[in-house]
Amino acid sequence: MKRKIDVFDYAEHITRALRQGVLLNTNGDKFNSMVIGWGHLGVVWGLPTFVVYVREHRYTKAQLDKTEEFTVSVPLGDPDPLITRVCGSLSGKDVDKASEARLTLVPAEKLQTPAVKEYPLTLECRVLYSQRQELARIPEDIRKTAYPQDVDGSNPLANCDAHTAYIGQIVDAYIIGDD
Ligand SMILES: Cc1cc2nc3c(=O)[nH]c(=O)nc-3n(C[C@H](O)[C@H](O)[C@H](O)COP(=O)(O)O)c2cc1C
Image (cartoon, rainbow, N blue to C red; front, top):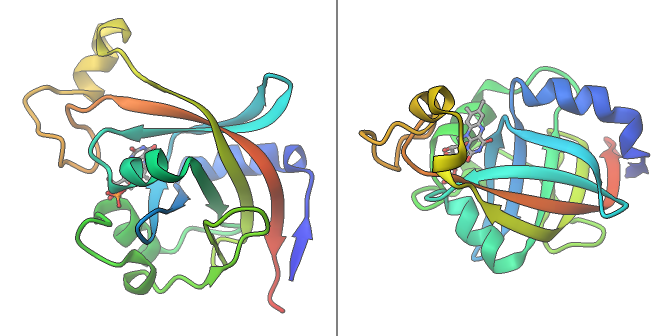
């Protein structure tokens, strides 16, 4: 069962959860889930939105570009270490993360991208706009730490790749219950 929510009632919870990682789910060639620590809830063009930042060589990026939709799954308690390890350091190019991380997929209400029962607070988002960062415009100290050019694009954390920001319109928001 899903309980509909006003997502702005959960703004503080979502923002705090990002510090430990929430899930960005996509469903292009297959379902895939990656941990994200960057993101923000807000309003763009008068619409409720969630913005995510995805580096160039993530499997997630190709999926997002193909389907232009995603779900965000936020834990209500502490994050599960298995989910963090599998979804935050392995790539969907190599593994089936749903089975490796033992995720229970739940059909979405308005999208083709499922939600994840273990992280029940769910946002369903349709991409309205995307834009790749220009590294030259990022302050030098941040650029050196977050985008070291002597590290290739496969490093799961800091690496040479720019992020693309995806502004997703939140088209549904709910908490998945046990029944
Ligand atoms: C706590 C945490 C936060 C992360 N935040 C982001 C993020 O905001 N954007 C990003 O591109 N990668 C982020 N990552 C790295 C991806 O989760 C990781 O590279 C993942 O393996 C990519 O999966 P994929 O190749 O299946 O898309 C984060 C990882 C962790 C552990």
